[in-house]
Length: 344
Image (cartoon, rainbow, N blue to C red; front, top):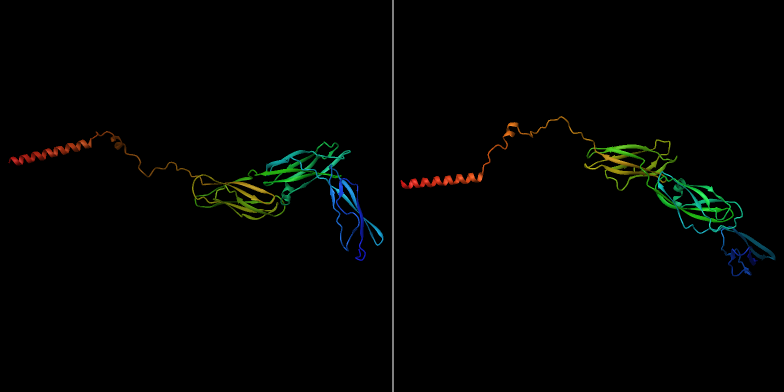
């Protein structure tokens, strides 16, 4: 409007009243400055879960002309969250499927059959993996009684381990939203395959295999062994791009370098992308050694027969007694010799 003749708001009203309330203290005699705006605060306090509509009318005058602005309002009612979460738990690469009954509390204004739709609200950083893992299909979306629940089939088919929760919101075409929490728990999958590598002590043996992405796009990947795996196991490459399906894929090399003999060296190899995970049980072993047969010993470990037969047949001699007897005879002889020399 021209700054020389600003409009004057003569009043404001709302139809119908009750659910919507104008919060303006001064509803008439308001003069707007040039290029200014007027804020009209409105509160919304529904008593039942159904769509509410109203209009706000702002009337004014400008250069002796009456002006009216009409603003339609549409109130969407959200029911309080359902107190119980529906849990879906399974191993990755398996399926958890269930039909859930969703009661629509405080439903009002139902005069005949009415069909409800749904929408999913996911964490922003999990939208991709949830979109490929979770499917919701209506089973009985049309009801005729406010106490009748709607029924939906939920299929959870995770491709890699993760844990999160999403909101399943039941939407009424004429207004109203009922949120329900779905708890999604994808646990570690069973191994996709087993790899056995045989290597001699202080040597390195390797096994190579190819792997492609499940989807027709290149996908960044990470390859690593779990923290409880043996340190003698290694994988290469540890990062890169995984080739799409229907290509030769990416080559992975698993190496085993034993440093000592002992128990088997085991580990869990994990290769994962944003949407998928593969796991392999890896075992490192030593070559099997056969004991030589029909080989004579180079060390003579047995006595000859005639020598072995003499063992234990000799009379036992008391060496102490023999020494004492020999000493006494020698002393007696020496004494007799001295006596004979003295007589002469």
